[in-house]
Length: 330
Image (cartoon, rainbow, N blue to C red; front, side, top):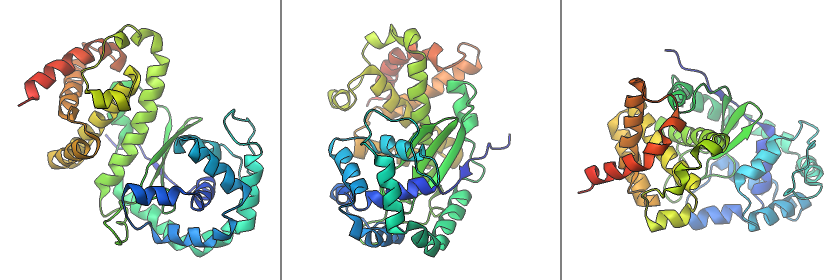
């Protein structure tokens, strides 16, 4: 089966928001999480727009960050602006007043078009590297057994600006949009080229697409799964603290398990094991091997005709996860 293509693109609205992000405290937050060197274009952008650090657009974004507004929300706002007019037709209740006009003024005062023209080679290289990294990858085929036919376009934007350590996924009308940075290196080393570690790009993209899909899927099937959500999932207290609701917990478990499965299928078991180990060390996901075995069981039993989609299996998910934990625990 031929792979369904992913559109690799560069969106100016996302680049604009990233430029504004560079003069907030976001870069310092990244360094506080893990010291690393952002891409040279990100550093160049921050210097280019530094004189606009007190601009109203930057102040509005800083306020949103201080209110813990997710990056998904602010990029969703930006990607819904018209281009090049930068106008928001639908006012969102959480968005700052006149933020679209502020962003438009920031864009022109910063002369970002000039910067992007000067940096065109870096963006073109990022696109070419990303296209090589995902060549032949078929997200749609992998996700179909869980959600049915996925009609949305998959769009992927390699991000050499900020955020430099975080993927961002946004659901737009008919589109699943993923913004992904290159893999960071240690300390003062430059980040990896996008095609030096294709598994990193594939992992990040699938995680965002799967998260967007499962979140919408659970919402769409809320009535059907309501009885299932009354039975707690067998997760640790720490995990439950991070993900307080059943839906939050299932989403995190499903995304982690789906990524591990896809890495195994695409790159082999060694890459999947490395990912599972990383998730255990960094996010405390000790349960992930059990989740993988449960998702494999679902796929096997679906092939046998026992289930049609994921919603049919959810009543058994928690029970099978408990069994898998007993089988895989030392």
